[in-house]
Image (cartoon, rainbow, N blue to C red; front, side):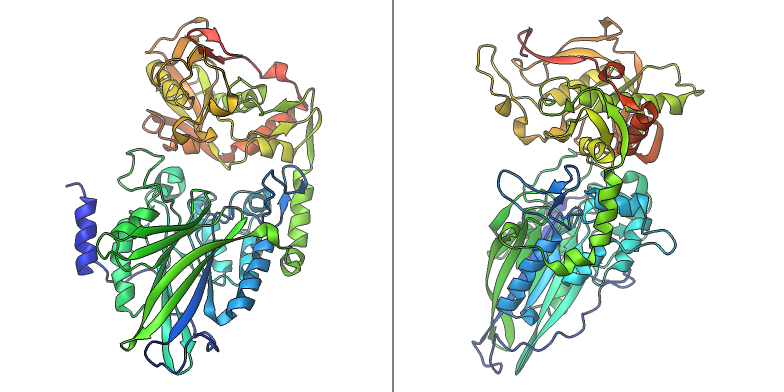
Length: 606
């Protein structure tokens, strides 16, 4: 019988059912006692107060330095932002000086060990899993800054369980994931929570529980690593189990670190019965939470107040901008009344990394690692005959994206040689991930190619029919805003309909088609041909796709359920570098073709 999530949540929240942790895998023990606070409250008298500040980051994605490895220069953007844990370290020390270190906590909401060439290098080139291998730069930096806990992000699983567990071993603080459970026993596979005590002279200690929640989408996005080993139930269900338990253990404050956004939506449609961006739902449905550090969505939310449906109490949420560009501060005021501590108010605010300099403690600590990665990404692997760019790749068939599809086609054809599928035509998908990537004419380096394919995706071959590919293209074409034939075209307003990100728009190579944006979504693919003839719906294709798409990322139709013919663990980015290295010369004549165009009522737009 399907789970009725709403009934379950109400029942569990009301009764505290299902909160026993007997046999849980290493639930976090209470932390060692913190130094006694010199400020905050006096002598335990009724009505006295204590102030606690919880700091938070999220979606660090390997950013330690204010450095753009793809441009080989200091990071800069139009908004004047700065990035990196070296800046966060300075902000954190400022807050500790203001509030008193013993009155603060520092948390992270996940996505730590993937996202830059720095993290790729220590996962694949000089891996932390090797015997006698290095300590991960993110572990070194976060330990030095003094994090108290971090939630698991979905990208923590991109390099497999072994890499994640080794990273976990290298940390001086726990990785939390109450809804990351053993697939067979359903017991926690990571510490669900950590409990911290803040001691105050002459008064009972303030007990703060931090509950970690991660994203159910891991079951889709990293299925190759987690299927049969780990399961990821919904955030609301697990919060409803654990929060009453934490309160029963005497927690005066409950903070949730959640690698989940606030929209209440999911990018994977109905493939999972659990919501991807559920942080606001947790606040609304589960009593007993004071604050939620939000992650995953890469948005800036200084303060969001959500009223709990059962208690009427306000829960405060905050999401600092990703890549260590912001630091969240939750300022929590407690009052000692009727023999116990009670939360009187919570407020949230952000501090900006661009207001401070790097902490030399962090930059000096990781200078050597940084230098190694800079040298690695600047290796020359080939020569380009002309400049290739993604500037207009969202609305024009750009040769630089054709390079990706060509490499994927070649790799899959070689992999299927000699099999029963070798004679089938191979087509491929690719997305315009970046709007600023460029491969300049002349020497081509690893960083040039890495900037083109910024994700650590791997390649999968699926068996698809012509009818399924047609539906796939129609879904992809929903990326465009419906635009009348006589309307003035503003390319900045032409794409991202319904908030769809660029990485969920796909080219498909090997076919020819028009996308008529004057037509409503679902009726835009016109003149779809293969080999010069109208596409046969019964024709079978080998579809070369990245593992994110193959596992259902973006909720494209048919591909997740299609038969898998082959897959590998080598990153597509690496395959592109190998292809360019083997060719020596990067010439668009070898891979570029105009496969699609935008039209309005049959008239080309560009």
